Amino acid sequence: MRKPRDFDTELKALEDKARELKTRKVQQLGELVIATGADQLSTDELAGALVAIAETKDTGKREAWAKRGVMFFESGSRRTAPATQRNLRGAPAQPGSPQSPAGGSGSQ
Image 1 (spheres, rainbow, N blue to C red):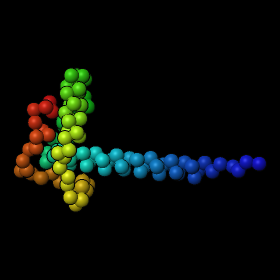
Image 2 (cartoon, one colour):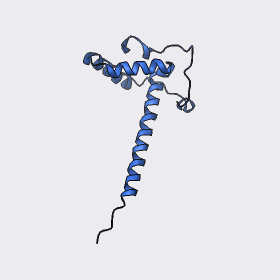
Image 3 (cartoon, rainbow, N blue to C red):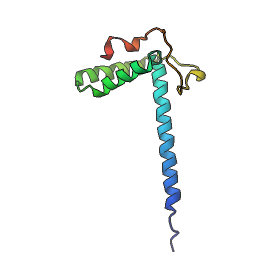
Image 4 (cartoon, rainbow, N blue to C red):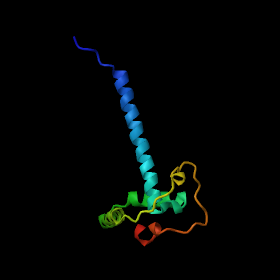
């Protein structure tokens, strides 16, 4: 006779895995923001830029941004932040900090 499946345990394991994947995604997005220098932008500026990018239907712009992203990752010139700066929770934007090139003319 077969052993009955424990659906509750399987469901809990799947929920735990989904939670872990979501946490990893959030962490990686935070690291990407830091690596690109976009952490120098205010929260409002960064959110506005991301909303504009997400709403853009112009394939030419999207392709140009994708090429720029590929060049960024291939260049190896990403800056790395100390572990203390990687915790983005509750970190206020730094007023008066200089704008990074990430907010330059290619982001419109």
